[in-house]
Each structure stands twice: as structure tokens, then as C-alpha cells.
Image (cartoon, rainbow, N blue to C red; front, side, top):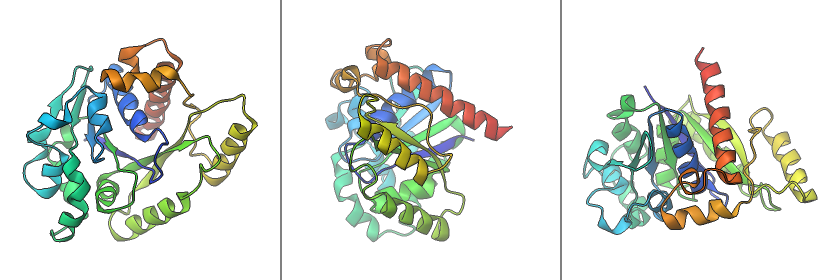
Length: 258
């Protein structure tokens, strides 16, 4: 049975989608069967794999609202061992539509249960909010990964995220745990960067990945070509960082499964 990891931070611009796309590709390249589920209305993970968001008959919106099963909407990609459940702009209105539906918080969990055994890992790229769509991700997930940028406002809003996680654990998903906290946009030349690193480690002891994701032009360029960075420039700092993160992620999960 595949492990489901929600990549969550209600603050935008923290490299959440960059991490979803590039960690997925790196895990696939290491022989793991991976499904990336894009439930962000912006659909940047979808376009990050070169999929045209405007020409999709079925998306994660249809899955959440019960219009089709997950297996009917999942697409193959050109990346090794990677499949994609794409997003749609229609998700922007899904919050209101979900309110009226039964089991509104667990619809994604129910849908993914039918395809879970086909994958080693299912990664969920969540919207930058803590609404019903993100709640569905937290109910469906085994763990959550929190990207945090190495900037002044890094920890702003994190208390709200942790409070939401505690509520989800209490009411819907008692097994939900933090997979890890990932520091992004790292620039070791700046004093502020080390201050943020120290503060994040203080707030999340033993949960911060040793791998930091650097600021990197290739990481920024790759989405415009519809490619994860390892397929755009394998030798770039960004590509090597996500490959290292995938190794750390797998090492941790292998140790826990023993």
C-alpha cells in the first residue's frame, strides 16, 4: 500500500509546488512508482509536467465532487514511474460545492483508496489555504511535508497550520504526523538564512530535513518548459538538491518500515 504525503503550507511562494513536482520526479527516477495529485486550483504541478490544463476531460475537481473515479482521471507522464492526477481551475469553486456533500472532508481519501496499492508514494500538492480542499488532503494523508522559505516571514501562519493539524488528528485522522520540514530558497551567505534555520529547528526539533533547497535559476526556468528540473538540467544545483532530498526521504521511510 502506498504512503500518502501532503505537501502543505497555507503561505504562498514557499516552493510547495516546486517541491511536489521535483520530489515526485526524483522518487520516480529512483525506481519508486509515484502518483502526484494536484489539488491546487492554479494547477502549477499539472503544467509543471507539461500537461495543458485547458484540454482535460477529467481532473481532481471531478474526483472530489464524485464525477469520476481517480483512476479515470490519472494521466501518464513522460517522467519515469510518474503518473499525475491533474488539477482544474474549477477547483476554485469546490470549497462551496463540497459544503453540501456527505463526508465532505474524506472524499479524496475515499477516491485514492481505490488506486493506493498501485503506487509506492502518493504526493498531494495542496492549495495555499486551509479550506476544505486542504482538509481533504490532510484526511487522506499519512504524513505532511511543510516547505518553509528561508526568509523573514517564514514562520508566519505556521501556528495556524499546526493548530489545524491538531484538529484534524483529533476529529478525522488520528494517525497524521509531520513527515518533515523542508527549508527552501536557501542562501548560506545571508545571516538571516541561518537565523531562520535555527528558529525552524527550534520549533520542529528532529523534523527538519538535512537537505536544503537553494535558490537556483534552473529551478525557476524548468516549469516554463513543462519539465521537472532533473529533466531540464540534471546537473544544476536545484536538481542535485531534490535528488539528495529524495535519498533522505527514502532513507527515513526505509528505516521506519524495518
